[in-house]
Length: 337
Image 1 (cartoon, helix red, strand yellow):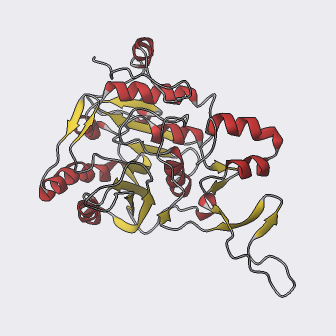
Image 2 (tube, rainbow, N blue to C red; image 1 turned 180 degrees about the vertical axis):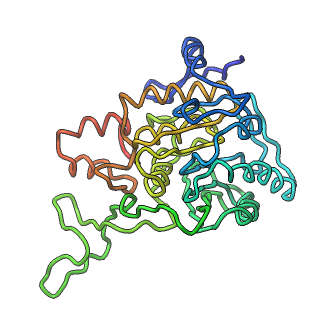
């Protein structure tokens, strides 16, 4: 198999890469399925296969949560695989061809999250409403890339939150945000009103909204970064997993990419199953899963709370000196954003 072309990297570049030895070792862990399988045969595994070859062989009603980051309706190259932009109607048909197959493998109270951009979001909605109950649309800010000369810079993406029924798990307390207080109101006794006045500043623990502005797209100095062109941040996936699954639940990703969903599921005490067509990305996922034994942190998430960007110092101070080195080493080489 042809490897991704090696790049010259700066000394502080923390991008996770594979050498020939990595590929040789990790591809031994990958599985393919050509007949119906039991859950124990695929649990905590990476399936190296086309989604359309594998889906029909998966067990019935075994998935608690699905996180899907499919190819958007764009011309995009993923290592040795390319996705070509289609007419909107054809892209919608392509979505329907595999979304319809998810129903059989879901538990009755399962949740499904489907990612998209402004061009693909409408098609995702049209397909999702045929099979699921749409609960919400999350929009997250992705501050990466340069601006456009003749258009608005594209710096947001959507995640459609769907459920199989009106009965589903959602743990709002697991995904609360710690935000700086801009207008620190006090009550008639001069005490903070719904906020904390600590040594490190004024903060409020808030309920999560469907607009996420605290997300950082992985880049070279982040220890989770890979060369996958559309890698989702661990923090983003952590919010989904913590809100919509319980410990030991099964989290399924049919377009696994570089493995973020499986990695975060493992870090948060869930079981996982992932499908990915590209061998290189499958091996990358396995390497990242191995690394969770050494780096188990999730950038921007500590002490059961999600933090805003640019708060590394506050996180270190809030967690005490004993965690300072761990946070600074595992989150970023120089700062948290």
